[in-house]
Length: 115
Image (cartoon, rainbow, N blue to C red; front, side, top):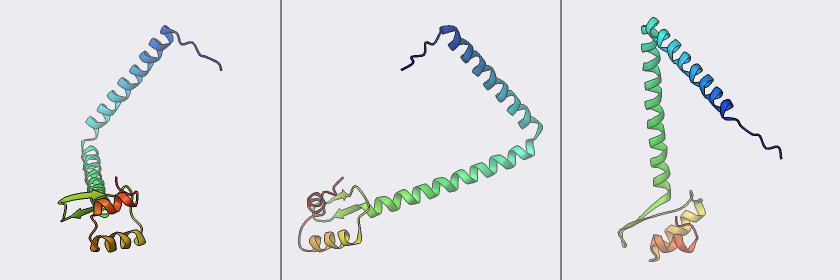
């Protein structure tokens, strides 16, 4: 395998070039924002509304996943979480066994689904 030897001067030059590109880009962006305040306000408003909508969608999805995978057992007073979304026949078996007197924790552990 061809090992590449990196010299200290090569790293310094790369770092200096990258730093110069970043500062130049930041300065040009700041100049554009100063020259176009109305467009900047519109862009910031659109980005913030898109971010809030995306965050709400993520939170709703996360809550639905948590609701689908967790079972609260009144007898033991605790939640039991499955490691994945369950299939319909697995949910039917869990509910049948729970109504026959087993706890959700023991059922999920027996089916190798307990997280």
